[in-house]
Image 1 (cartoon, rainbow, N blue to C red):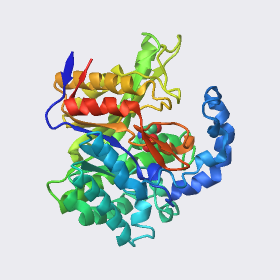
Image 2: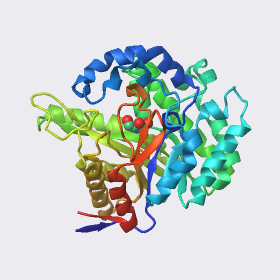
Image 3: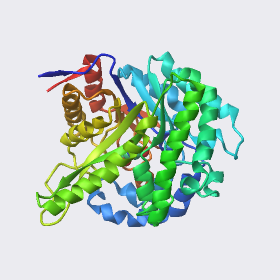
Length: 410
Ligand code: IFM
């Protein structure tokens, strides 16, 4: 059976500045230096993977450092994306490079991103620009970071500068990435930067990201009324352990707060909504989690989940994009099926009328996975961090055939 996607569908992969560029200096870098030893020690929690990924016990694994040196190698990386047939690419602009001192913008760095954008266009690849993918300039940390009173103001001032400088080459803007993950892991569980455990701060950070999105939406449109602007959030399928009414209720509550509330708050100031889907979570009491295959990170593989979530989010009547969907799979044994099966679910939603415009695999390259460091391997392209050699994984060719055919054979 052949499942064809709509004409003009955007196909590509995504990256984020801090995870691939190398030599960034921002609030996250600072946290890495202070926490790398602790993270290496606490990796014991993932010890079932210890034989395969001994680097998880090494503090250096948790320092982003040169990362993939994509800052210098972007042209080569885009050559590979082009060879694989990608017609779109999502990347992020690093705020700490653009505005290293408060209110002072670095024109040389703006020029760098102009070159990145033109390198994509030259290869026939549509750029999708994320303006904030979790990292901030150091001066902002002193003002309370994302939970600080004036965060939306600072963000929209930076966005205004970027859109005035680069706007003529950009059609698609993604203001903020995964506010729900950032607020919950950063401010509530404290598992990643800034490592706080304060629910009120978490709510403040989340609210600020909503206001920041709205302000950025307005300032981009002021500059270019034809721009297409949205934001992207992490979505999880909450799976009840059984049909006990308490479990069902818990799932509905989790679903509303994790998957829906952000989109509801921003949909009147968004031209599209972005969805980043990876996994499901078992919820509730009185039973065991249903068994599924798992990624190297232990995340459940559940392709049907994206179908249900897209159907639900579609009720907000906005065009949708899948801006992230991927798997940590170092030996590349699961990735091809992962992509195909998730795309089959996306196609099912499209065939039932959901307006989905594009799919971006996470990630183009292996990269720095935040508080897990370098050991999880998400890339279509394998990166040897010592030599910076790129090796195209087999699953990339499977994805490439899907793109060429604009559809999947099941
Ligand atoms: O690597 C991250 C990305 O930065 C945000 N979304 C989830 C990915 C995988 O964990």
